[in-house]
Amino acid sequence: MKHVISTLLILIATASGVAAQKPMEEKDRLAISVEKPLGIDNENAARSLQNNIMQAITLNGLSSAESRFTTLVSASLLSQNTTNTAPVMYVTELEIMAFIGDLYTGTVFGQASFTVKGVGKTPDKAYINAVQQVKARNPQLKSLILTSKDKILAYFDAEFDQIIARIDAFIKAGDYKSALIEGNAIPRASADLYNAVTERLSAIPASEKAGIDRSITDSYYFSGSREERVSIFLQ
Image (cartoon, rainbow, N blue to C red; front, side):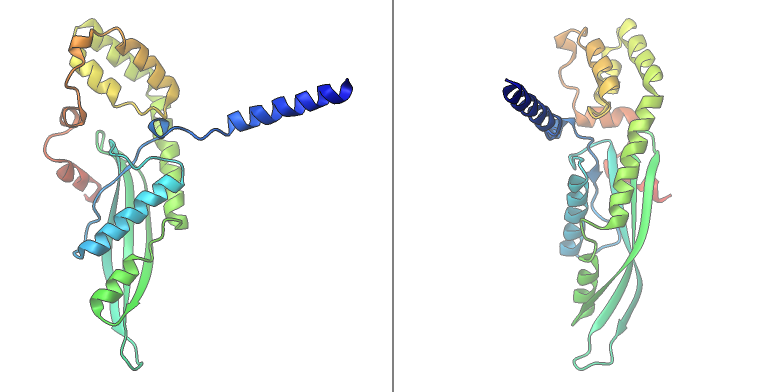
C-alpha cells in the first residue's frame, strides 16, 4: 500500500512539474517589434540583420510581432582595410547600435553597442559578412532584450493605478474610444494589469468596440508615420 501511495505521489508531482513548465502561448508573450535596420544600404544585409534580431527576441522568450515596443538597430562603418595576402581580401569593421523603446511614450528601456568584423573578396562582401556576425545568440543582445523586458513590465507595475484610473474616467465620461485604445495598449505579459483592464472594457457595448485597430491606436499616441516616430530614438 505504501508503495502504491508513493507511486501516486511521484506521478502527481511529475504532472504538476510538467504543467508548470507548459510553454507560454504566443499571444501571452511580451511583443517587441524589430524595425528595418538603419545605415545599411544592402537589402540582403539589412534583411539578414533584422531576421537575426527577431530570432534573438524569440530565443529569449518574447514575441517579435508588431508592437508599441520596438527594436531599432543601426550600423556604422568604423574601418575598411585590405590584407597583405594574395588574393587581396577586404576587412570591414562595423559598430552596431541597438535600442529598445516605447513608441507611445518615447521611453528607451535599454541600449547596447558592440563591434563586428567581416572579411570578403570585395568591399560589399566584407560588409555583408560583418553584418552576418551579429548572431541571434549574441550575449549583448540577450542582455539588452532581457533587461528591457524587465523594465517594461516594471513600468506597467508602477503605472497600474494611474492607468486604471484613466480608463475608469474615460468609461465614466462615455469616451469609450479612448478607454479601448488605452486598454488595447496594455501587453498581455503584464497579467494583473491586463486582466483588470479587460474586466473594465467588458462593460463597454460591443457596438463601440469595432474598428479599434493598430493604426488607430498608433495615431492616438503619435502623429506621422511609424518610421518617423522610430527616429526619436536617434535624437
